[in-house]
Length: 153
Image (cartoon, rainbow, N blue to C red; front, top):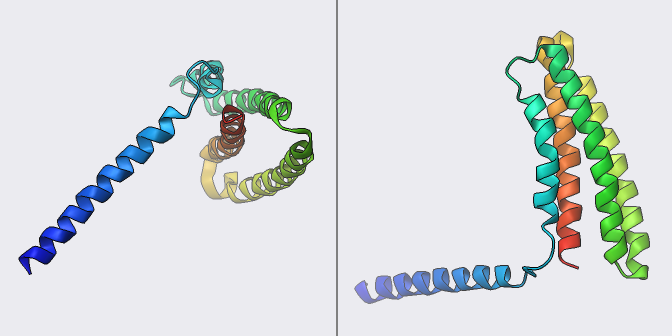
């Protein structure tokens, strides 16, 4: 019984060490000279996130800040899409375009759900703030995904 437990412990330790080695190896694949597209995007986002986090915002101030951020994100989404298009082989570009069109349909459906669920009637004056946060989160996630794709080309 003791030998069986020791064998299990040793297998767990070896498994953990192998996992660590694989993770470290995966990080070594990145090109250290490549631009940090995600870091650059996050730096450009700071001004909008600061406006949203302003503790002196009124409800209207939050709504304006979220609208400004969403406009910024839409522009960044287009930039990220162009970056990955430039890096993709010709045969994959049409797939990216189709994927992006499907994502836009998904985004629109999510936006409709958000609009119809987080209403002033059900959530009071915070409804608009919640809607802004949820909408911007969806777009931001897509931008980061596209930038990850671009980083790997």
